Structure formats: structure tokens, C-alpha cells
View 1 (spheres, rainbow, N blue to C red):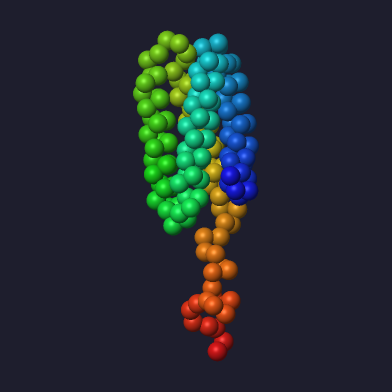
View 2 (view 1 turned 30 degrees about the vertical axis):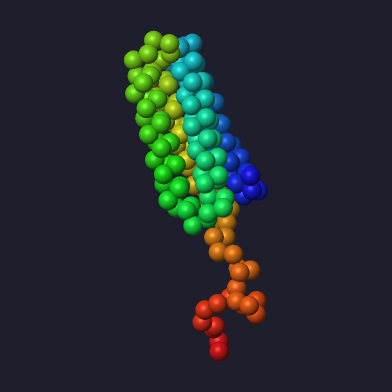
Length: 146
């Protein structure tokens, strides 16, 4: 994993962790032990789905940087679909509180995505390699000032 990718992943976790912990505490206070279980399951779902999605994005774009936008949109769509599937599947479960699960999943998910957007923009990763200029070491294209 590249250092920029590791920094972005660490930033996502640092933003989502406090939100997830707060969701677990609030779910426990308002829904008891079933709320605690629901919030912990939601936290695990977010970490697994979004962690794997981030890994897949980095794997897809490592050798093909021109696919970043398309791969990013595809991974994001699949992540949202998976979150929706988990909400629908566990909607009427008796194993844990469904509302605590849904709200915890939503809050942690939004925090993860917000952290990913923020730290991706902050990383300022170059998408053009400036060293691949012309044969004389200068970039191709019209020169300024001549």
C-alpha cells in the first residue's frame, strides 16, 4: 500500500472511530444490550465493507491510474448497495435492535465517507507524472514566455 493510501485509510478510521464509539454508547443507553449488539454489528459491517472497498480501489488503480474515477464510483456504488442490503436483511431481526443498527450504520458510514473525501482531497496525489516529459526533460506542450 502506498503511503498516501495508508494515510487516507488511517484518516477514514480516525474520523469513523469516534462516531462509531458514540453510536455504540448511545445505542446501549437507549436500547440496552440489544442496542449494543446492533451498534457493534453495524460498526463491524462498516469496517469490513468500506475497508475492503478501499483495498479494492487501491488494487484496481495501482497499475491503471486512468481508472481512478470510474473505479471509485463503482466501488462507492457497491459499498452503498451493500450497506442497503445489510439494512434490508436485518430490518426485522430479533437478534439485536434494528433501529440502533440502522442509525449506527448510517452515522458511521457517513463519517467514513466524509473522512475518505477529506483525506483524499488533502493528500494532493499527482495524477500526472511530471518526470515523463519530452526527451530534453521538459514537459511537452506549448511553452510559456517564448
